[in-house]
Amino acid sequence: MKEIRKIEPNIWQYVFVEGENNPDIEVNLTALLNGDKAFLIDTGFPLHANQVKEDLLMRGIEVEKVILSHYHPDHAAGVSEFDNAQLSCSVHYKENYKKCSEVWDSKHNYKHPDKVINNNETWKYGDFVLTFIEAPGHSKCSLITLINDRFAHVGDLVMSNDEDKPIIPYISEDGDFNEHVCSLEKIRALDIDSLILSHGKSICGKKDIEREINKREHYLKSVIESDGKADIETTLIGGSASWSYTIWHSKNLKSLM
Image (tube, one colour):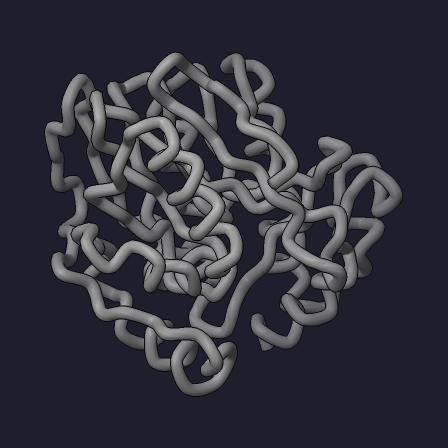
């Protein structure tokens, strides 16, 4: 574990370096604390999940609910570490669940959810009011979690590396450029003060949020308008040297085609 970031007294992020293949991408597991219980957003890989579980248990806190921002291995593979917790995710989880289990990362024990979440469904959890918003683009099953109308956990819709460089938007196999743009517009419309990321530090302040959304929308729209033929330097505000994981551009073009 790299560190624990305390976004609020009862909102903690457990920060990990993903692994040797991606040394500059942080994986964040977000815990919402409610007395001696916790609600966890994403589980990382089993090693990450186990360290979070052990740290919370050491503090007398048990994870009782888990939600997945989407079914990708770096978000869902560790869910088996929380057998006693209720697992929830998008109603659109099935395609990526199958890919996780059979194609991408079959060595891990992926679980079906105990509950699926409908668009704009709202839960009360301790002092938290949580609203879940379907936000496809990076992945069909992506969810935004709005927390007390102040914070939004945005999964992989917005990512950055450990040097705060923006990571190029990634369109996965079941993702979609136009849907990603629409989901960024959903974030913009929330008009909140803080974005909680699954990869990278939180983005705080409306001006900074607006700037970071604009950067990613510019990339996505430039690729769309070029019919997938855009050179990367014309798509990224500040040029490719200002961004991380630009290698994903060629994969994104194939997704669009």
